[in-house]
Image (cartoon, rainbow, N blue to C red; front, side, top):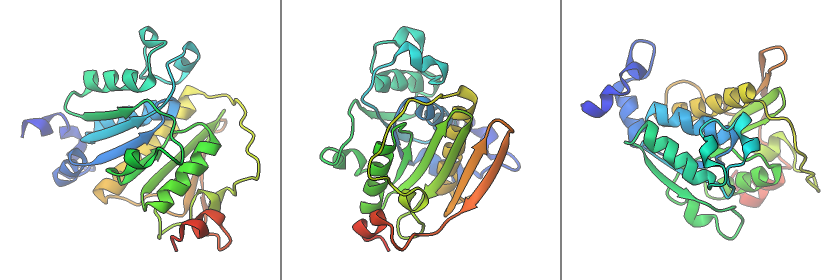
Length: 245
């Protein structure tokens, strides 16, 4: 099959199987955010051969993005990030179908965005948006691959409604979220984005063990990973509200 030639190195020894590759080619993944984490996730999913991706972001490309948002080119400053991201994907791998929405999601407009996708990748940089996305995923039984970075540190986990705890089980939502601008370093951002893409790979193919009820934490200052186990919090507001357990 000609299409599989591109991905041949994916299913050599110690890789995935050809059947797994075909699952990737027939899969659909929703990427929330086309910034730093989104750039890395988009790159990796396009390279793996995920057949259809949908990219959501309401922002435009700015020069200050270019230290870590590596799919966006200097010439695209001022353009919508979703358009810039789609251009990159189509140039890199024209076989991949790309949907996009230049929109900031909220509780009123998200349903049509998520309804055809069972895997959501959280690439937002705002915790307000991350908690909202967590509740949306719980409410509609969508797998959610969470990622976050700040400076030299990052974290990843995979949330499966009815099977795992949720983001609020791990990090309780404060009454007031104060968003601050934190350092965003390309090596750390790309490390976490690659791990998020790897979680998507495991969910779709069934190969390996996703980070279920496990929070993988990366400390870039000493190049060290550690894994924290967690469970559903019986008093978690998000889980109770969405009646997932």
